[in-house]
Length: 527
Ligand SMILES: Cc1cc2nc3c(=O)[nH]c(=O)nc-3n(C[C@H](O)[C@H](O)[C@H](O)COP(=O)(O)OP(=O)(O)OC[C@H]3O[C@@H](n4cnc5c(N)ncnc54)[C@H](O)[C@@H]3O)c2cc1C
Image (cartoon, rainbow, N blue to C red):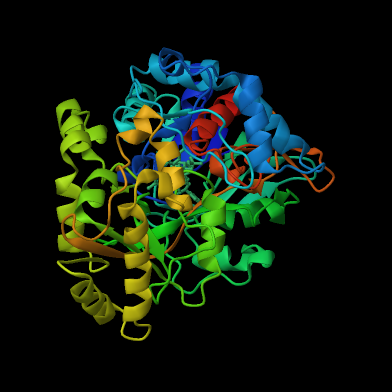
């Protein structure tokens, strides 16, 4: 038979590359097919930051954090809110918490990559308990370094066991009565073709690059998705492979569970329509609605429950919000997710990183103020409001509302600390107790009177699919009767990071790249 190989991998993201590498090491012949060009090898992990939830690492232990798979699994299940039906997602959560050291941490170290010594404490939980301990580790060199190391290793097999088809989109999975045998493709460069293999691995990522699909599966209890939704992934993450899996009888589950973010801005240098950047929203900023009224009743502040923040933002009548801060806060707390806006980490410049932490990230703030019209700076509140209203003529900020929100907050912060009866201040003081997070969180001071004021206009931005193709622990795709479809596997984000939704409703954060590694290695072994 023409075009026959041992394993076809659909998608050259981190999960596809690792599954390929591990299969090649076992002597298998592999074909990787990707809709994008060779320069994009690595998929979203090229752009990702490289934060990973890892359990009981030397980095944690050196900081006195006593973590264990048991504690992590308990935190995970609490945040995930699994139901009785979530057998395989829960199995994957358990597998993750029990194997993050040997399957992820050691694997990365063996590729000559290390983690920053600091461990952050994200997603602590708000009404639902989350991470009871800090466990967010940052790859030194970002995930781009991981991808570059993988590409180097894969190159040893090219022209022998490994081949690629780029700019080639899989349009259909091919199946006989009892097994998957290959796929059909549409190729931008050559002709349409069919490829055949003993095993086909779906590693095509999620669907949050397709805003129509996101709107279609948006959680019903949230009402409609807001109109200003930004695209935080890539248009090739369109979910068409999920449809192909369904077409041959495979199951997809938990598609309405997504891990989107509340603080998106349009990318000033977009690669595609609605391309957004996701800010790590400064904790000390005041988060207000389109009129300038502080969002409540509990103030919005990151580090606790991202899902809750997105839900609150989606409730707003007018689909944008504002963060009000000043230069002092922006220099210490402003960050943007991804390797592009964290060059000191991506390029492993330790001195630059230290300067940014202790002297402020002037470069990032200046870049945003110059390039993005969603960043506004002014010397007074009146001037700020005037400039904000030039951007949002249709839905202006109310001078009274915003002045009231800012003046009220400033009045409380001006008091002695014992009288700071404000939930945002309480939470900031708790965050500052953990040294790593203190480095990136200002001691509370008034917004006015500490450098120019800054306003940032924000929209919801899509990012990760928590649901996906249902699999068992061997990454075999399950049919409607929960029976494995012979020859078909799913890994990475396509599989909802394992089992069709291993994070349940919420991620402890940084559970994505790591789950791609876990599922990819498991699939290679299983095949
Ligand atoms: C800016 C940013 C920052 C992030 N930061 C983090 C972080 O710090 N920590 C973390 O854990 N996660 C992070 N993530 C998420 C993480 O990067 C992704 O979840 C992960 O990289 C997904 O990998 P994957 O291999 O499953 O899929 P992808 O990387 O999406 O790769 C899928 C590939 O499949 C191809 N494809 C899709 N459909 C077809 C088809 N029909 N035919 C052929 N090819 C197809 C696509 O072109 C793509 O190359 C971040 C994501 C972004 C965008």
